[in-house]
Length: 347
Image (tube, rainbow, N blue to C red; front, side):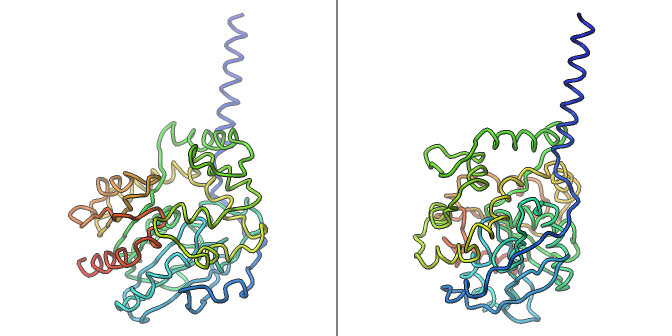
């Protein structure tokens, strides 16, 4: 009897190990079939008069804003999910007028960039690789990186991949999800299980919000509520035209693969991110500044990770921006822009 029980336990352990290993996100990827939002969808967007620029990066056409003097110091602005470079519409002119060359790309699947049709064509690694190659294609040097939301998840890995191209980092309302050891292996499978248990979420209840519910909603809802999401995640009342601007790249569900899958990918590289934190950011001695919003409960306290870990964060004028919600670029664009300008000028 004992031998049978031991055999059952061993079989269960083997199955468990196979499941955990098989559930890890692959770092291999291939270019998928894409769709492009018609230019007509972007006509007459408020406060977004910028010329469209395009470059091919590892098989995908990437759109980017490129404003300000060509010989100015480069500021790279990376957006998250489900936003696009439209998020920076109020900051771009301020930074350009201050003499900086402002580069604001749309991640693959967002804005005016190519949109893979299948969610499975998206991976954390693909987005890191494409954006790392993007800065190579434009041959950008001496950059100041500003990242918020997924802009940080992707951009912080890009900095680690191309450290010689970056001189400074400013972070707002972002994180780099990381874990080592057993937690690093189990985190993603357990996270995906928690999302599966939420089922087919069609609407978000603000009174019972959880991250797993948000992930399930993004994956399954038949009507992605851009207007409601952005207004709930800002303290400033956005106009109907502004809210429509955020939804402009996605005229139908066919365009939403990236928007739907990104939340699922948050925990997909816990071990890899932990290695980057330990081997790279724990030794990063170039300037790093945090400016997080006081009203962003999702990212509350995440700024301390960077302040405590990164040598280059020591002695910097870290700020909590009063009244700033998650999409702080909409709530406090003038304040964030000035903090960024001062950070560059003081370092």
